[in-house]
Length: 296
Image (tube, rainbow, N blue to C red):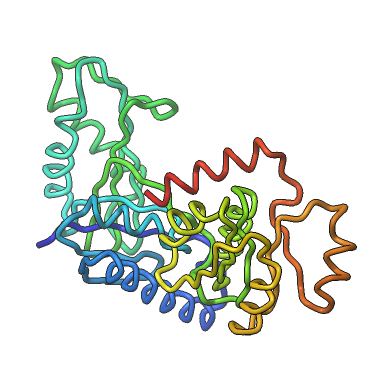
């Protein structure tokens, strides 16, 4: 069986059942689209609340999935039948390389479905078996500040073991909201476009020469369908043309508050967005560095 990556999504689960189903379908399509764009293949499976990707390269799959809007976090997991003895054996195998002398650890257990044990009982019993397995290592249970966390997620007849989780961009899947055109002339403009994409908007970009690296090298990795125009030194005419061509619902501009009156006069009835308007330059740079890390 190929490696398995467990995908979590948060905000989608709060929607009504019909909306949630549509958002989940869109998320699945976007995942497959990202794999195709990366020249990779995978198999996708879903249950209530999670998605699972089966791919030959788990690390490569995680890099791809961290660029998919709607994904809150991912973990490379060991998948097995829900059998307490088998879970214990596999957990000990998973933990052994990470539990050195004096390591503080915690077992985090969760379950969904009907089972003859509670989450707390499972975590307690597995933690006890870890201590019994390596009595000479001086291991300690520390639920508050562990060095190593051993995660056990029981979902009906299947169980998933993992050590950590890596963050995704979160938000909503691309394509569930409207269309916008964004001006990318700096990290502030690029972050504004990213935040609109995170809300599910398909975003076309007009970039200046200064904004080209942000658009081509980072933002394009989050959307294989991303439409780019530029570099354009002024960008104003290109913005209007691209907005017409894409039937955009609004424009995303890196505006300070005082620039809104003149922008409103210039763009008339078009809806204007400036998601970074309340952020300092330092906040923008910090958040943009996080975006670059997700882009890989």
